[in-house]
Length: 223
Image 1 (spheres, rainbow, N blue to C red):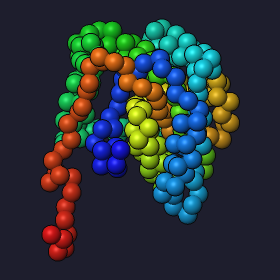
Image 2: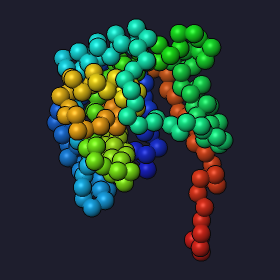
Image 3: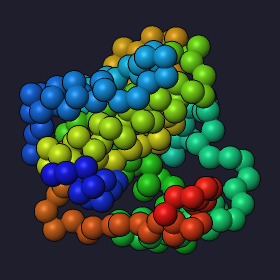
Image 4: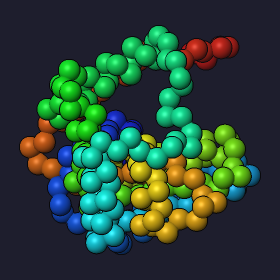
């Protein structure tokens, strides 16, 4: 699979099979991903790879919180700006409606928040979840580095025939995650990434993207 194919086929999968992912494959992917860009070569990320019984326990705890309507732990960083404006709000609303309708959750369903939280807490059935942390002393530049690292990981997973789903939702249950993985208090959870093989016959969702003219400006003589 070449780079263009990996980029084009990468999407957030929300229905995984229970087929296990070998440690050999995960180590190969994560070793190659160390070549991701890193300003000053700080490599500020710390990844916890959770599988097996520890993941099952984490899912049990997080799912119980979600089903009980637990609003989650106090956020350590905002998921989105307090007030989104167009065109960002329009893109967000369209994607959210498409995403959860495909999972059988209608927008006017009064139980929608619980159902969404529960599906996320189950990591959509994934047998592996990667939890990416950064040291609290790190700034925006290092958070950008972590994003580039995770994108590299997700593209390499595609090269191995695997899919993924980045989940910022895990920050809602960061204390539960921290207890299971043993993360130090000096680390802040950026997100989780569900990893596995896509479940057969699962609805395939591919959200749209803005036209190039909306997000890119050419300055100069590029032709």
